[in-house]
Image (cartoon, rainbow, N blue to C red; front, side, top):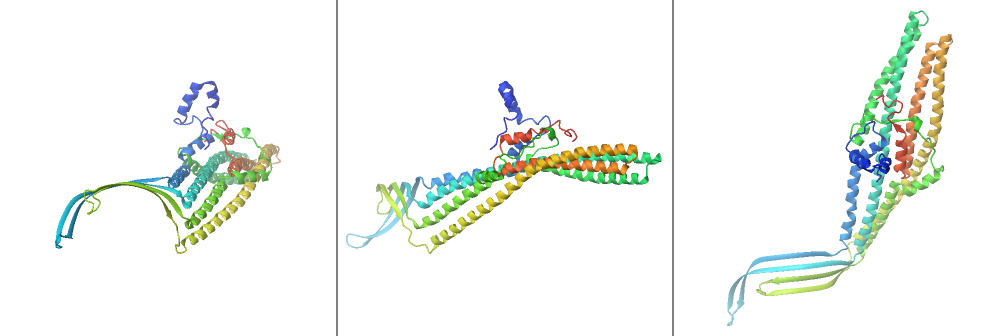
Length: 465
């Protein structure tokens, strides 16, 4: 499990140990002074996400399969105690042949201590090995649950940031259109504009009002989506600072190597391989039904007045022996179990192959999303600069009489679209990077810390919400 407790305190710990101790004690108790960042969100999700907590409990339960299976190979010791009151009526021939009736009232007791040690049980040994494979599968599934939780968290976190950026863009667009509408009305009153300019500006302003309502709804949903995972309010988040982003392509730069690493380390495939091993051992268990079992059996008993003919007689008995059970015929049950286990083994093998092929496809897709995402971001950055210049040029053209208010509105719309697409491309690049590392099982402290270093409370728009 990834531990991020040292991220914020490492530099302090090296210089001021007392300050580090105080910070460590307060880290979990105090809310962040500024916006919640990705590392803090991840730490909260590890403790609060219900899906991950369920996976933790399920893994803990599966771990108990090993000691349970091992217990079937260890000695079984039992003790039995019995004390009873008995009454015996008897009729026996007398000295002259006549029947003589007698009644005896007596107390009886029996104490037995027994031990059974399995010497050869093919079924139980296969069951023990199978339990270990099941634990390996459960641990791999837990790792997958953690990685899935991290992908869900990053998706919710950056979707929330995207919704906040969208809201800020809509507000800026609203203000720009309001200014354009006001300017169009003043120009018309001064006899320099047209009614068409007013109508066009009004239509765009009305449209942005509708977009504002949609943006507000989306912001509320994405915020709640994040809060469900971390189980705490998320009103303030550290925002993405584009100046801090490092647009680096995947390393190594060969998708085949990423695919090979994924096939080796992917948590889902590791669980599938463990399931195949478990299925093989299930087949061994089925075959064990044809094998004998051998146990060492020992007992020591102490009995008093055990029957009517041993009244007031005490016996102390010790026995040690080997018990062998040989199965002869079970109506075809064992053969049916073998066929069933063999079919299940083939099922798990085919499921593994299907998962492997799907994984290869997903790795290739996310690899391309990362590499193409870098090119897309750079292209949109240039598009944003061009859009800024277009707005500036159209405003100058309006002053020179070569452009109209409609031209300025169109240029403004293009700039807002470029900014929106650029923000979305940045978040898509980050999520593609997270998904790629998640598929190959390489999400670690360094990767999360790197992405977290791109966030800032002083980033553009950080104080807007």
